[in-house]
Amino acid sequence: MLILTCPYCGQEADETTLHAGGEAHITRYGPGSSDQEFEDYIFARQNPKGVHFERWQHAYGCGKWFHAARCTTTLEVFGTYSAQTLEPPKEVTDLLDEKRPGWSWGTLK
Ligand SMILES: [Zn+2]
Image (cartoon, rainbow, N blue to C red; front, top):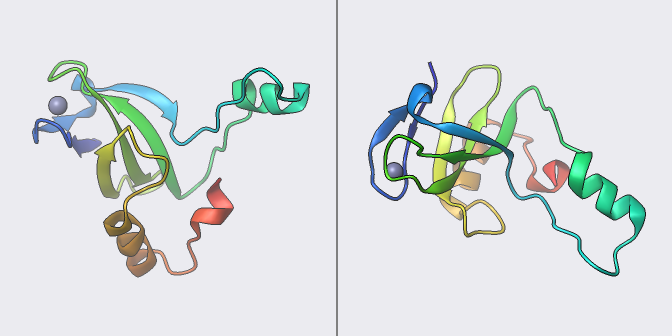
């Protein structure tokens, strides 16, 4: 079972009390963007086997949205953090560097 720690209220929440919100750090395109950019924003998502950045809502807790970095195959969680960030915090990327050598943020954007 997936267990994530809410970065806002600090509660450990299992997946039955969370709501999945899909991939995190999606670049939003608006007026002036190309059709391809807008199509990618709406439909294109990564589906990695391994490290993935996701949006979650602590639905049956404080109700706030946050981001989580986890492995999709092992459910290992590398960290949770505010949804108000454009990139994962350094402590999360440092842990990924340690536990998943060769991992690169640039390849996941
Ligand atoms: Zn919470």
